[in-house]
Image 1 (cartoon, rainbow, N blue to C red):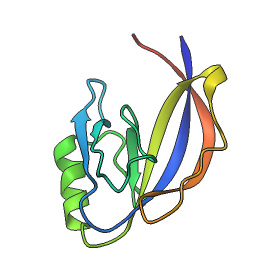
Image 2 (tube, rainbow, N blue to C red):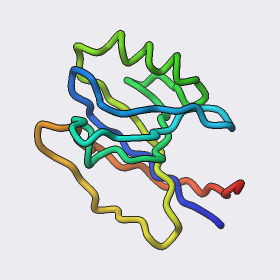
Image 3 (cartoon, rainbow, N blue to C red):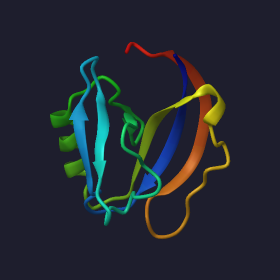
Image 4 (spheres, helix red, strand yellow):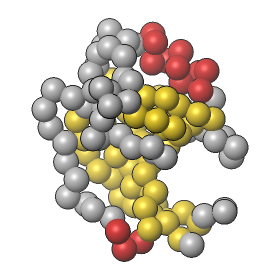
Length: 117
């Protein structure tokens, strides 16, 4: 099945993010769980792939490296770029977040990915 991967830039507030990350078998990291009290709840989802943090490419880094980057910047707002895969016809391009929680800032162009499963 073919999927579109949309790149989304999320403004993450200072402090703990309340998400659990896991290493992907193919390299890189994805979101495993978003806690209910996470400041990113509603803007980041289970299955999102972490692509960059503050412009640093982390698309092929492991959880340990990404966690270290996030911990070093815990007292500062961060820009996190994620890739979200969705089937071709179900992409909602009008998804925007606002408020004191994490905020969806920008939505990039879709990239076509083939599912390896």
